[in-house]
Length: 633
Ligand SMILES: O=C(O)c1ccc(O)c(O)c1
Ligand SMILES: [Mg+2]
Image (cartoon, rainbow, N blue to C red; front, side):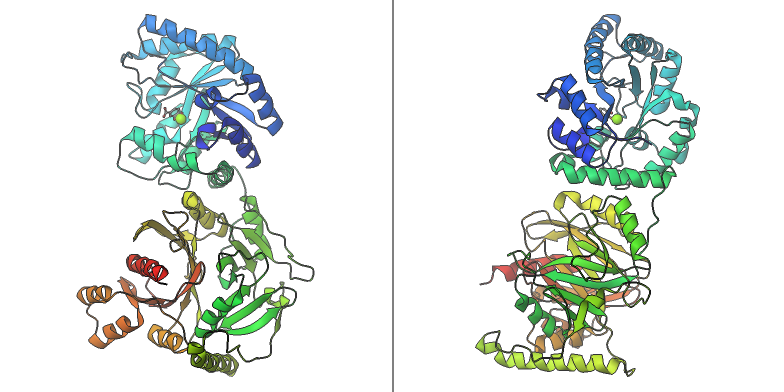
């Protein structure tokens, strides 16, 4: 089906909006009158621009306050309409949207409204134009789609039909039966279908509509259910997104248009009108890749965390660091930015990497070159909306290329001991001891000795501030992960939002976060959480190896004593190590943080098997402590 987007949904000038819509793959646009009025191009030039871009102009909108008015007011409305129909002929647009009246002149008289709309349609027909009548949820007398249809039916004019808008319908619907009236409308009398979702908010419906609409799948409405009802009438016109949203008005139109189109593709999939390659849910985390201009701060941290450098890439400055099942790639390629280490890529274990990549590409995720260099294993990879590279891996599968084939084992070499200051020289010795111990543990593994199972518990990545809901939709739909509820976290300098997506057994957990202040490094650092069976032992070992744990204020632990009945010595241990504690119905969560290097830090977590969260209750304290740490010399 033809996909379309209203220009009001995108940021920028009309020509910027058109270019973004075309690039994202839409087939057409609804031109919003205000966008046209502010555009220096003549209507014929806009028409030509759209044609060049391969866009049809499927709707011109809106005409307001037309119907149900006294005769003398209506005469003026017809005069106004004639001007607009002439304009539409110049534009090459053949459908106009008429919103139900909000005018104080409008009277509650359906026969009058029907008669006037028929006259309007009669005039429109002379110009080859059709009139689509839409019930605004806040229309003065007409504010439901059933009422709009009654009037259109009574008018009985071939050039008059209804425009259905999911927002106006679903914002008022309180029960599934409220959609059943759609079946009463013949498909050919539905001239247009506008789609928007919205978060479920208790607020005035006009404000809700004008500021908080979002793309289907990002809010709380059953837009798919509505589309199914409309398709069942035989409607085969455009599926058009009309999203009034304060954030999208400011955000870059290019990515917004891509996110918009992705949401429409998913809607078509859900409504059964498009087939996409099915999701291939990842089954684990193969690796996390840190890009850093300088290896030292990252490798010092990894070493203290008990990782060993297990292998080196054959052709690139990339080392594989490993502890248990947790693998970190440290990439010192020249492309690393000067702002220090950052999380650049995530390797996801996939039962079918090629199929996973096919779904991602069908959903408009940019594919990355399969071979980044000659001789590299041909890995499937795509970019997430925030630019993080997602690699689909099949580690250890003999049938498929293994990313580890690009790496060659390193002989165990002594760690550089003088890289830190004189004062930490003895620590370096301890670091080396830890490294050797970790290597020994790796070696004994194959002999069947039980070791503490270290793996990546979760990854926390930060999103561009204006693309948070799209990021969630991306991870849900492209990767087939399930989203938890979004939580707001108080940062001393703003509000963070966080939403976790995970697979069913929790072996893939990604916390998507966004900070209020786009330039704030602390709120925008990513982190890698390492699972441990014993966070106290892990924290002690880290500290003994020269690692610095994030200090946590005593007030936090005093409060913890009030909230939970923890043994005194347990509490003192947590206080000493900066371990935070949380609990839900499924169990407890104990966690602590390392210092931050560049834009990345690590977390050590001990998660009871039933605990589902990420310690969100502790995030404000953690963020404040991280800010405080940054302020120190
Ligand atoms: O908010 C409005 O005025 C408005 C205008 C046109 C529409 O299609 C709509 O759904 C709302
Ligand atoms: Mg609308």
